[in-house]
Amino acid sequence: MLSGILARGRAWVSRIQSRRKRGHRRRQDAARRRELTILEIRDSDPQETFARRMAYLRKMDPLVFEELVLDGFQKKGWIVERNTRYSGDGGLDGKVFMDSGWHGIQCKRYKGAIQTAHVDQFARDLRKFGMETGYFVHTGRTPSGTRNRHDNVIIISGAELVDFLLLGK
Image (cartoon, rainbow, N blue to C red):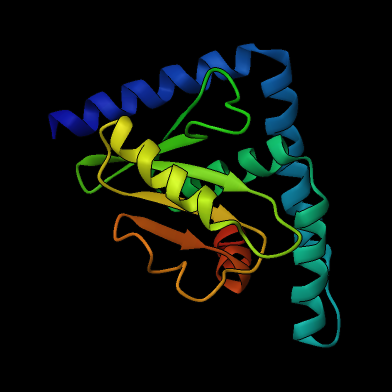
């Protein structure tokens, strides 16, 4: 219980600190607008709707995509700690508190297949930051064998990603 209260405090402080930065605030606001745009993308064929939504996500600004993913975790009711600085390539893009512990989040936009080296680096980053598990969220294809490559990395992509981002809509 105490860890949950502390997590909420950390998440609240990180949200306030990130909103104070103009670039973060602008990207967080853009992420909310992009979510509405994704909802508006529709076609008579569900496969075409999915393909057009994924194409839109792949073209999105990478930092706006990151904010969109963090918002998706919040909408699921989890406590999200945002970074006060964007990590670029390397490090964690954020953290989510669930099951009495923190889990890392890494967001990547890919047009093709994801690079296994990125998943391996994320697994190392999780250990470096003292986390047991994390979420590798991406817009590309996941090669066979990569999804189960690390027990501590949960991959969210494809239809699962679109459903995750549009939860409750």
